[in-house]
Image (cartoon, rainbow, N blue to C red; front, side, top):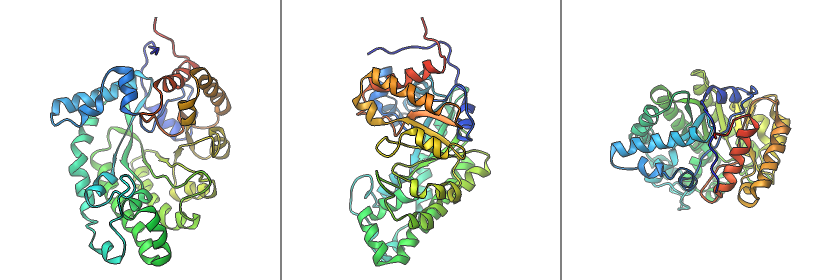
Length: 361
């Protein structure tokens, strides 16, 4: 496996800010929602995630330093990092989404008994020191993209379970609505403190909330509009008050509700695409005059195609979207450990050479 080195890359996080603000940037920025530890290790020989979770402070600091260094070495202007609310919910009886456990809220009594007010404090007790270390190890010219991970829908699912949430919609409409409002209260409280105390290292804020699957939204579109998007707006208003853009990561076929996502939630940019729904260029054609578009190559292509085919796919995609508003190029989803490192490198190297970077001799 060949790992190409490049000459004198100097990161500039303002490239990502401009892309999120829907401005074309000639040195089109790379972006990933997340990159798995196996890929990082196979490229650098380092295991930053293991160090970041160490009980030793010096090892944790070294882990964060290695993490930042990986993104810089690979030609990114930013590193992606978020701290997930569902990690807190799991400790409080959740886990229906991530761990496929049975939901802990089944009725009004469970809802009233759940310690909602404890979630923000537990969140910062768990992650506050990590957030500070992320900021302290940030290299010159770089900042992070991310913040408070998981959106309102994913967190409600984590406490109730998707199937039971669908039953609850018919059995108790009032409780169904109250769940989204209450989770919105929790998110607003967490984001308000996060932005005030821990966000200096971030240039673009985001959360991930997968609203759809390959043909439609997971809940009826009216429910997305009535119950979920107003809670998003509470967060985006807080973010915009700091002068920074907001990026929504959301998988699935969202075309039936995407105008409302833009208008009600007031997002600045969106990430996630897969060819089974629509090629990245379709998102750009439809929405590139209104928001920035982050994404590009279907993750399945990275897994299944040869490096040569990946390079051809990337070049075709870049030419299709060139000059059409704010673009940050990436996988359409993320780089988990099952993505072959060769495929990931083929994508990154193609973008870096397309934007004119010189290979080190």
